Image: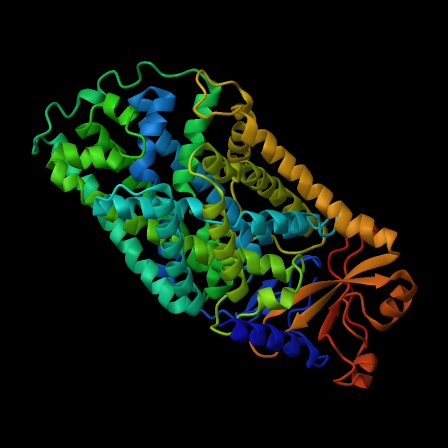
Length: 591
């Protein structure tokens, strides 16, 4: 296996070295027509792949279940108790699930506008931040590259899966037994995603359908409880004076909101695979809202079922066992023992959906040129899947599972990701207005779908609330360290991203007397297209600019004189300089 991977790396290098200079119908910073759709993007963006090297395995069901499977993980089965404990109100707890749906719908509108502008770019947030903030050049791609790769692990999902498998088997597992099963389970699912996109999508769709059936069963059982058709006595007791005792602590309120957002995370997962969808935007516009509507209705009704069957005091102290208490109350203890197996299935589907989405983000970061050896990360060899991104995600997940003990430290690293993510969503909202302004100034058509101002403002305010309120002291800390540690660390992480960009893109090239340019590589074997940053000595910049047009392509006469042996790169792209101003689309190619 090691020899095979080594040969694959070498073959990828040969694909680039043996290439010849040729035209591209997806020139950066110019108009591109794909499937009759005009696409305009900034020159700093990763190249548009007019044909997806990953294939087109995502249809209506794929979009629906990519979103559903990431949203419906274990949150709806375990978080209701945490939310009730934070809010101290049954009525407000139920309303929070409605608020979560509204928040997700507003953010979904933002994603839809970006997708209408860039319908052949996968990666979701990676791509949209890149296009929203092209200046300073490479700032957001560089910062997001660090965040995406470093936090691409899915350790918490794997550990939850292992715990529920052992619970279903009735085995009181030790921490290292849980770690071992988590590693084995995650490895198995990662291998499926590594070998075949088609079959991983099919398996994920099947698991997602099972998830919906589980939730529907809980919902209909809740209706039976409310109708008095079960052994539960006084099923309406939790709904009397349901808004009494509402907390006024800001930290508790925002913690409950974070839990709700976590339960709805995944509403935009399908935007990570946009380039793998035929006629992507019209399909996303129809199916993505449907997935959110289905999940939100089931979430709300499932929580009504919980409160109908289980006393509020028990739910408040249930931790991750809310659904188990529900089954026990309605069907007895024996029936509740089968629930962990169902939740384990749900967790497995969630892991697959996350692997599929995140690996596309990592690949898109590489295509921006922000990771060393981008041709390797962008390549779909040998199985037509994002091979290298899947491997790095698997490796980081295994490292986190092995390195961190269960408890506060493990949960801290998982929660840390939520803070920068809220910052990025806020910047996406603000970036919408920046994109609209630039396109209007450049005389480009506006998006075929535009998010409502109310949705944009609401999303921005929610993000600010989540970013600010965790600094407010809680009435009772639920961790062994300072309550604001993850917030402070999140801010430090953002600062670190900025410093990394300054050192790598600005300071080191200046010290070495170099200037950064981009070049575009087209891999012969699978047609993948990627950027690669090139640091050129200042003494050679004049010659580079003399032989390349403003888009970074070799002039025709230079390309015709080039030999295969002397041409190491396919198409060169010129990085848009910081002092160019608002010019995003290079002049017409000179011949």
